[in-house]
Image (cartoon, rainbow, N blue to C red; front, side, top):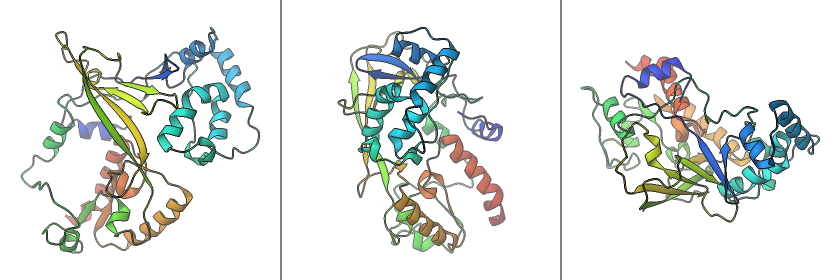
Length: 320
């Protein structure tokens, strides 16, 4: 999803999109609630029929428990949405995501928690939203289907015996690097902290398992963070004769050496290490560092695409 006209125009050069609208639900103590927290969530959770004004006043009253500057993630979250909603939908989920008690996490990890005082439960509010009709693989295949593009797979950028290695290319031709920035410099300034994910896939012999694409599990004693059901990502496809469905449970943990990094942790120590790597990166000749791994930033897809287009404007154009 995006509201960026340039990004939307660019991606539509390579794929058509369906009309999927992302909606997320949370299972808390066996009851399902809509997310992000909205007027429906609030009224269902408190067993009430609050108006928007009444709900807003309730949350402000509950959030007033925290006075002064929040000292950790828990206090920050409570200052935004109050303790009852925090305990139900944020505390356990966050603890599983970070493998850390929220009281021990920095307040800076969250800047806001969206609360809507309407019944709108679309997760995103962007102007454009959808998924590529034939999947992301087909989209990428169309992007690289060009006479001036050759794709080589199974290439290790750090294998010096390869003609496409770092040693063979950097300083010889322009390079766009989207791998982990600490790996590029062989961890010279230390390793950056990352979180990764493990997935457990199951074919379930029912045509519809959970009725939505994503179900969060907020309770601490449920080991996974959420369940994905892929059939709901393509409502345009006819599944009237389906007898089974594919689900995937998602588990979050700290990345270990050899794991695929997903999310930057960005602790104070990480930010110090990143500053050293950015200084090194500035000295690399004709190398652009991009993407979530190359920039050590949490980027949604539309942000990564917008960043890439900007880099083309500012730097790659000068290489032609």
